[in-house]
Length: 385
Image (cartoon, rainbow, N blue to C red; front, side, top):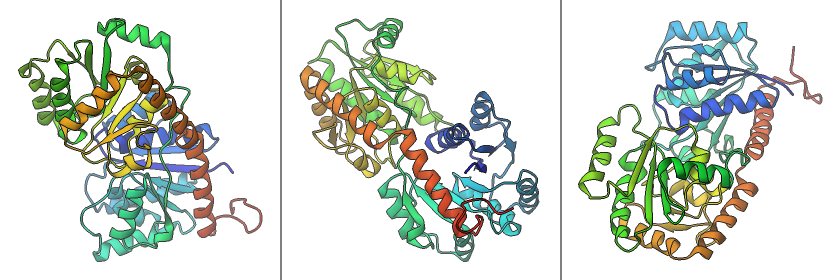
């Protein structure tokens, strides 16, 4: 049933949550829905939405209570005949919920990408989450956290894992040769890569500690950092990158900065490291697995939904550079193990973490939310006029 869906995230940062808004909008459009994206002004989300051919609605909701913006948003919902609202950032609920007061049959779906440390039990939270019809948690740890910390019926909160287009992330010999030539890697180099925001919480300090520990024993090893610091984390990112030269690893470590050709860069690697201190899910991890890379990841949070230890990848405790180095060394020294884990990891992604699987689950959830709101005619599945 084609819908007109308002997708909302006004964050001005750029990370997994913001990327999800763009990817969800593209995915819904590809499945035949009319998508109306809404984002903040001059944000990375706006830039990427426009690159995807959207003309996003621009709302400045930086804060919590915006009566005028809520009125404007309510008029937009009427004018664009919105059937359902999909929100990626909880903070936007402070404006979305008042805007929906005049739209009783329009369901509100919230997708949660991170957990919270403090329970949301103020009176305002009861009002907000009473209006939320369904919550999509991107991993089981996020689902349990949301159910425990928010005033909402636990049955409304379901896990739908992120999915990727496995046709984009796959072993690619031509891309491998091209990227390695560009970056100066020889055929016999073993490239250990990391992809993501350059920040301590993503495990970059442990990654560099690992590189320093392995440099002597594996002269053919090279280390590739793909990504840059996000807005507000520039100082931390700069401190990490400044430490490369101080460690004496300057000739062994390559830093690309932000790149749009991540599938090709992954194809150029031999081992993928994912040493995050805490991770709600791990999109970069499943992208690497889909590429056929053997992986070493932290054994925490949403990663536990992804990796089967010893079968589809190796896991180590967070914040432990020594154990990260030992696991990577095991892979560098055993080509057959790298091949076996890489093949098993790709098979797991194809079974559990594809874009099509995620989209089908979201369609079912949307149907449930519409029925709960009385937005469809009983026994027909058709939207009410």
